[in-house]
Length: 173
Image (cartoon, rainbow, N blue to C red; front, side):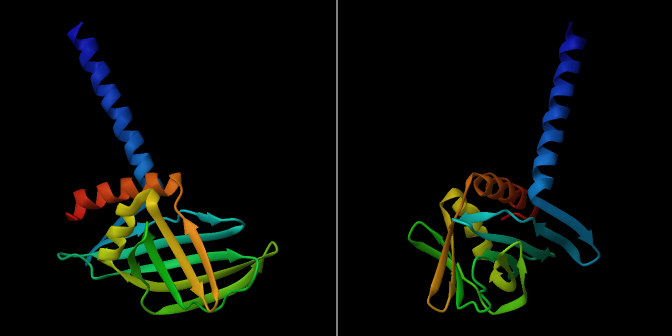
């Protein structure tokens, strides 16, 4: 009887650990390198009407916390947007941060929508605040007189919570 209970517990724990590992690999990839660990936070879609904002984040963790995170994002919209005045992040009315420099990587038309791909950087501390905001996160893309607002969704709430937990365990923040 005790052996069956023990085996049941072992199998149950194995299944839950495997489920957690699959869930975390859906949102975060860590690659060990000679000079540290490269973290890649996989894209999660933000939607505003028919427009889509799809960010991904990359940073290298060595002995100390990284200062900056590479942020690349795709913006799908009905009009071509080549310029970006600012990209800002909010939790409610509190501004969490804005982008530093910006670069348009490419602009192309795909299935009747414009796909603009941008590259920029944000402080690591801003990334942590973005993750902590969870479902309250709102991303605002500013281009001249145009502002597109992308509220977080349930998938972001799930992903950000999981990523934050993993980063706290692995790098202590």
